[in-house]
Structure formats: C-alpha cells, structure tokens
Image (cartoon, rainbow, N blue to C red; front, side, top):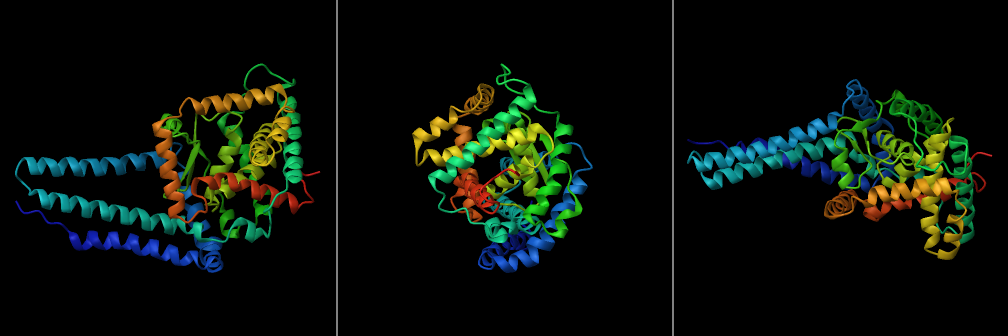
Length: 376
C-alpha cells in the first residue's frame, strides 16, 4: 500500500513556525515597535478574548489539550510501527511521515504561541515602561525594605490568627473567595502598572490544576496556557504562597511574560487587597526575595532580620519549604532545566534565575514612592 507523506503542507506548517520564531527575534530588536503594535493592542485583546471563552468552562482546558496533543503523537507512533510490522509501510516512509507530522504540529504550536502571547517577551521591560530604576541596591536599602516587609507580615499574621503563633500553618480562604479578592485588587494594580485599555476587557478566573501531583514533582506552583488564556495553579501550593502564586499567573494573562515581572505584579496585586490574607502572602513573598538578595552581601544581618519574624510566620515559611523539599529529585531538576531552556529561548536574561530579579522591581517601585513598598 502506498502512503502519501503530504510533505508540502506539513513542511509549510513547520516552516511557518520557523518564520514566526524569526519574526520574534526581529521584534526583540525593536521593543518600542512591539509595544505599540502588539503589547498595547493585539496581545491583550487575544489573551482577554481567549480567557473569557475558556473561563466559561470550570475545568482546565489547558490540561485537556496537553493530553490530546500527547495522545495524538503517541497514536501516530503506534500506528506507524503497526504498519511497519504488518508490512503495510516501509520503515523509512513511516519515519519520514512521523517527522513531517511532528514538525507540522510543532509549527502550529510555535506560530500560535507567539501570535497569541509569546511576542510579549519582545516588549520593553516593566522597569523601562514605568521608568523605575532598581539597580545597584545598597545593603541599607535592602535591609530597610526587608524590615518593612517583616513588620508588615507580622502585623497581618496577628490580624489573621489573633496570636503570634497559631501552633500550625495558617489556612487561607477558599478558592472562590480568594479569586474574588484578587480580582478586585487587580483593578488597583492595573492603574499602577499602566495596563493598556485592550487588557481591561476582563479575564477568566484562575483554575486549580487537576495535574497538581505532576506539578508537585516538577516543583511548579502554577502555569499560564497561552492557547486558552488560562491561569492555572497547583492545588497543593502551601496556603501562605497561594495568593501571590494566583496573582502571578493572573499577571501572565495580562501580558507580563517575564517571570520577574509576573512575580512583582503578583506581589503588588496581593499587597493591594483589602483583605489580610492576600497581603500577608505578598509580604512573606517580598521579604523572602529581599532577604535572599541581602544574604549575598551580609549573611549575618540577614539572619538577624529573620529572627524578627513572629514564630507563626516562621512556621508558615518552614512548612512551605518542607512541602517543596519532599518533591526534590530528578523530575524537579528536569523541569527546571526545561524551564530554563524555554526562558533562554525567549531571550529572558538569566533564564530561570530571572524569577529572583523581581528584587530589582521591588526596589525600583519603592524608590519611585519615597523608599516604601506599602502605602503610608
């Protein structure tokens, strides 16, 4: 039996992905142009539209589509080997057909990724858009901001639990309540961050991932799926981190592609909440970032500040660390390597280390507001 390769159409689709990636590299050299034609118009419109459509369905479409894609590839492999085994197809023909089919699928994936969201990586940085400068932070500056966050987290902890040590890790609000709280505070964050009008069409609510066990072993607290506009988060994420994590994924919906920017936007959104628990989560996140940076210059001073945490706050942080440490292993290292490769492919400075660069945004934001991270 003669099997057609459909090589023209499949090769064309594969080449479309290559051309789209090439266009992305060109746009990286013209961030201002990218901001005008994509960042403030096409990008947020697509993300908002997809998010609202997928938001109608309560479960994660992202996970369904990933399963469908994997099944499609596996079924193609199984079918090809079955045809070879039954002498219905030559080995070279089957391999070539499989390569062309995979290339076409990847071409579609790459093209739609950049058109729907990926070009956000070519936009100017948040620092340049907001004209903030968080570089060259001094030890005294990091110390002051870390102290502010420790005091703020201590205050919110007492407000939540009524004591300095509740005796067990704190428990945050239910999913629906937390999403409502963060959606409300995003309205204030959008004004500060200068989101384009096209991004203010609204977005679908974040969703809890059904594949949380997989995310656990990959030490991943959440992910954004550009093809559906969905913000997904790990159900197992420790409560002390959950509000900031959800707000982080919501920021990806709003066009913040770089991880440091999403971290900062997540902090800002949670910190602007009218409710104590999101603010507590934000302050714990920020102090950990600032103390990590400070420890690179003055380990003793950093440890001294850590000792100023209330026992209950320290308990929450230790519980969060212990949760992720139990999943440390080959799978988590592989996930980090893949994430690092993905970020470097999209020209994110430092790759996976960019998550920690949110310190510069925290410092820059504080400098723009008289040296404080919290409203007086």
